[in-house]
Length: 263
Ligand code: NAD
Image 1 (spheres, helix red, strand yellow):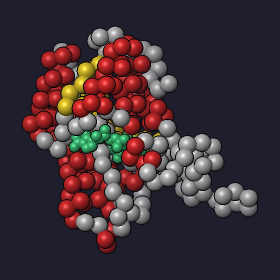
Image 2 (tube, rainbow, N blue to C red):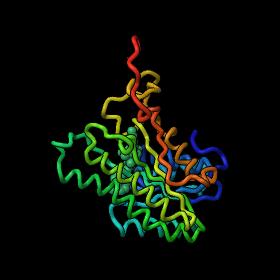
Image 3 (tube, rainbow, N blue to C red):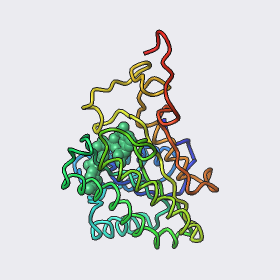
Image 4 (cartoon, rainbow, N blue to C red):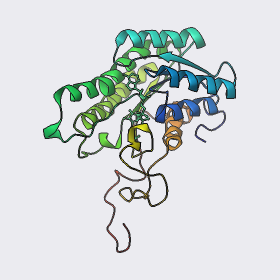
């Protein structure tokens, strides 16, 4: 289980795209760590169900759901105001909402490229901009931006997606530098191939030896990414800002040696 007990005591965290996948795992880690979470998403039924599940398990004050489209400034203002109204403060933001694509650069559709950048990069930018005054009021805070292994290296078939995730990595560094004086830390997390709705269709399987492309030989599972997110949200990471944390089973560390008998 991600989110060590007491790790996030008293902290209020907003998680975008929190209805399912890595966002839902991050939301679970926040409440398991003693914090309170505002789950936001365009998926209303799934998001509301998760908030209900979390309040059932951790108490009425543990979680709320707010409908939120990260591409809209107005929707961001409403989501952040909702968090402050419900919980009185905000200490953390996990910019997790994202969409993906799999076209080759030369074949990628321009409108789809724009759409991906709009959600994955501009959504993160608006979010950071919107929460800064509120985090400042709280005396500081932590922003965790979910980039990707595709934001650390050039991966085939990730034109819009990879570009947006490299952008998120860069924006995180800029935020780290500009917001340190306000006590706001900004870091990026770079998941490798992890089993969620986003990736299930590419035919990956969970389990040892099922993903030879990564040195550890397997795909990740959502709570393994959420542990890294919870750490960066917590005071254990008080001196960590501008860092890029790969959580990818070694995928971006280097090439997997081709050894006889090893697939
Ligand atoms: P997912 O598709 O399961 O979940 C993404 C969530 O984002 C969904 O609930 C979706 O409704 C929400 N969302 C999409 N557009 C939105 C919008 N405009 N406003 C608000 N919410 C919106 O995907 P996931 O695998 O859980 O991915 C979560 C994040 O992790 C993404 O940013 C993704 O790029 C990143 N990531 C995932 C992997 C992986 O292997 N799964 C690897 C690297 C990075």
